[in-house]
Length: 81
Image (cartoon, rainbow, N blue to C red; front, side, top):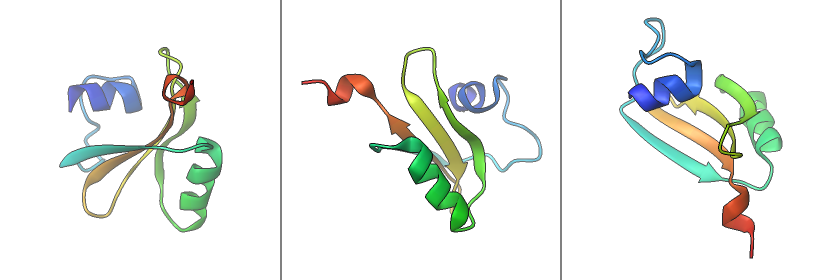
């Protein structure tokens, strides 16, 4: 989970106060901000709000009640064509 911790929190270790995810899944969505807002309004707490990563993918992430690290992403190069 080192990569996930660095991507979410900018640190190589998962924070002590946040449960360590058991798996990681990402969904590509057309509008990350809208998808994240919808999840927040449904009561989910984001680990981080939408932000554009150095590799130009926009991501927001949350930890599901089942212990999954869930990413909502917009990946421009997957939509070119």
